[in-house]
Length: 202
Image (tube, rainbow, N blue to C red; front, side, top):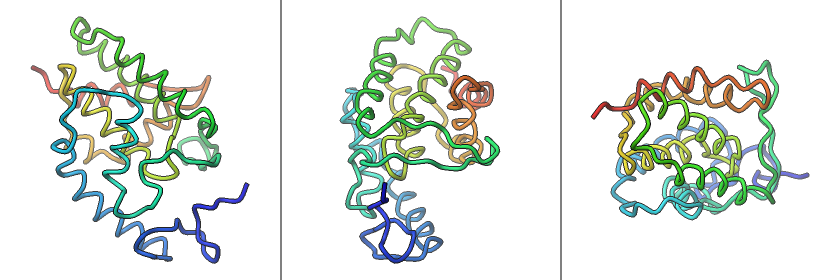
């Protein structure tokens, strides 16, 4: 299927800045989203965690860059991953995105996090966030949106997460999410470790 998110003449995502150089777009996106992420927690005061919140988070972060910010992708995607030897994670099909996200969010909301130890919390939370990330609901910006949803959820449920640590370990976090989303070969140990380290002891 043709990727209608890209410009016709160059393989770069269509954007509000009309930047057609991939490196320049990456730099502009990084600068803009840095500012948006700086105060994003102030923009979401509600303790309601649902699919609509995930979409709203994406729109808040990427709305100045992409027209489609805050909407689920309409095409299937693949991405060769270095940590999988060039293979891709099997992401959700477009028609399944809302259902798959909803299933994970229900598990998050149905869990009594207050009764779990830090080890139990890190283990279960890692697996559920990896499951949400594997859906890959957006054409671009999935890791930042899902991790933001995760940190906001954690804080609202009594186990605040060190966002600075996650930001400083961004490449590691993404690789860990990839390893934890490899179907029957999923390896959660790296993601569990980073979340366990990031949980701020109360």
